[in-house]
Image (cartoon, rainbow, N blue to C red; front, side):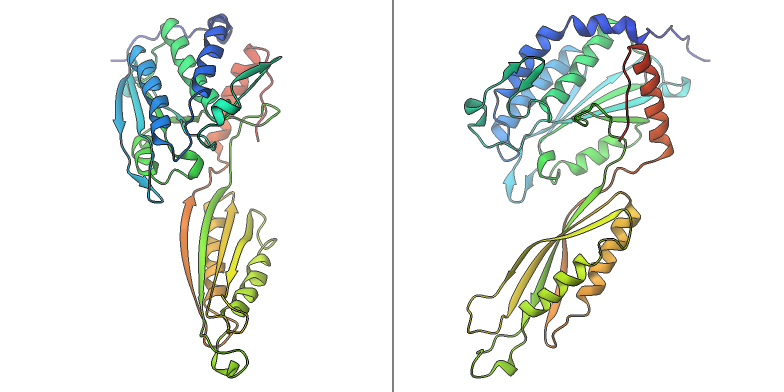
Length: 343
């Protein structure tokens, strides 16, 4: 039997509820910005987590807190997962909606004191004020508005807050992937573009370490016994940079090159740190295969190259489903007099 449906409130009916919360929003934002919560400052991240968990609990969310472990040998803060069941089951058309934010910033401890929250006209300033403390708070405020308006026509709302997004989410990613399974819609509570455009697709990023091993020898007495790793690395730099332009959606950058220890020694070891970006998973796969192919053919006899992928953030691809979501957002924006663009 299909559950009875209630009339959905119009967007313009919710707008006054949002405006009434502006002063509290700014006060809460100032408090959040005053907390140093860099990715490697777990105590600060967990202060933000404490505050966020209290807000979710007050809204009737069941809150789970997960300590995800370490990232690059460093401890991170906790992951928060808030869940609230609505009154429209999935079998009756209700949807499971995920909101995702992060609690960490890129700023070192002490930044909040040296550059505190401030308002300058219609702009707020401070470390993490937009990315992502403003986004985190916007999501919580939206949930508060829905609760006051008695909007519960959903199967479930899941609110995810992570501690390590700014360093690529190495510790929290398994929790995020597990939490996102089965969601019908997911909204990232990240800052959009400066002109207000909503982000509907984003390139993926992968980082690689290429280690070149050669053979040391005295450069004056017996250079012929050596195998110069620096020379192989130099050929690799040229070959990898030449991948740019082969595929429209792929960029490759050799960002770091290190080699050698002394000028009178044929270089025995070198390393390259390489980043690839692509709008599609297929592009990421093509670029990685090209890197591995170049590494398999070292330019200098006696040298070898090992390729190690250090990190991967898959692309958020431009899909038909995303465009349907964007069309829905545009129609709601029109009710409020907003013109929403997509990028």
